[in-house]
Image 1 (tube, protein in one colour):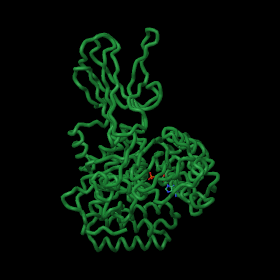
Image 2 (tube, helix red, strand yellow):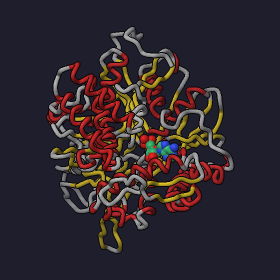
Image 3 (cartoon, helix red, strand yellow):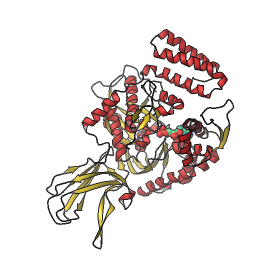
Image 4 (cartoon, protein in one colour):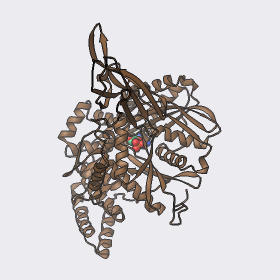
Length: 587
Ligand code: AMP
């Protein structure tokens, strides 16, 4: 892969549009350059930036691997897997600061934007951001808002499996086949069925779950080690947060190891989260772990069957099964594919990288790059979207029923109008409640918000009200309602927490801008401090003192601006770590 230098080949007048895979556990940034998509490294020279945000004792913000190091010793000052809560009105506490999930995502996006700007030596204003296909309207709007707060003009949000398919389509334009992309990330699961022919990529169906991912597989292992069920895991988390946090770290390593080895040993921390010199261990085989994951595999099979049904295809009609997302490295998933589709999956690209590369291909399509001028892509709306209606049963009115306006897996962009009618004579107002889902009753679907339609002209019961749903290429819904000749009312779904006014967005941006980021140059130093701090917790008490002292001197030197003093403090710390056999090379 060519290195980016300061002699960037970007035309200066065109804004550079980057691609961002905003992942649950890690995020990546990419660009389309010289006729192909490429990944951009972060300030540490790594392609994967952990989606973790931390607040240091002095209030400064760290993002990525420095925050990951901090998490091990001070989980209460860090936030991770917040992508799962996107679109929810919850606050996450980091030390004495509170953040919403979209604010935390905006900090990750800002860090990626800065990395891209530094590597490409140009200002970055535009981005394509990927989202799980199964993200609903709230989650997508929250993602767009996070992008805006990070100073990015979000040109398009694109479904993650679609992005992966774009990379395969980019390389195999001449093929004619049916593909199934299975995307199992850290926190979300999507499946997409598509057809490729003569440079056209037609998404036929998408299904998934936004609360199922690799983290659930790790959690099952943690629960098994604690020899309890999920509820006991939650209880243990409350009672012994450091122990569970460290055990989860060990289980995460074990899970990855079991993707290569037949069995492994998990080190067990004591109740305070410390490891003894010879810690107790728990032996786990790959077969046991696979059995443990049975209930999760059943949840995975459901959406795959549904997507195939919607695409009117049999498993055997799928030519290639493509795996995306770090969790598809698990043998249990690969065995499942062989069982279900009767063929092994195709793994041409690194499952961690392919979504970000696809975002760069989408950026090229938006920018009409000559390298993609023979490619066309069509996507679908993954959900059924509709409104609540009242039904009449023998003169008795019963509300709470769901009437679809857009059917799941219709090709987007789409705009469709349905006629509804008033229930009472001279009815002047209607509250249009909007839902997503396939259940007959709205109570079993997801509420997206409501639209107040006021000032209807007087008329008999049954007077028409037109309702139009428009779903754009980024998967954002607009609802419009009107009576013939009356005023038109547009979206602003009122319980929609993220429909902020431009002034409110500006205010949110100012709040984020006011946060002090840890200086980028110092990130590696910061990471070293967090690593040493973490190692301290793992050492035998007799070895602690030496490292403790070196760390004190190092942190003190970091706070001062004397270069020479700092360099010698850093050398000392590195020497102490080496003498204790602690490998900081792969930090
Ligand atoms: P994401 O960042 O959303 O793509 O998800 C990364 C997920 O992949 C995390 O849950 C990791 O635990 C999981 N993962 C990464 N590498 C492996 C591996 N070798 N075996 C099993 N799971 C993995």
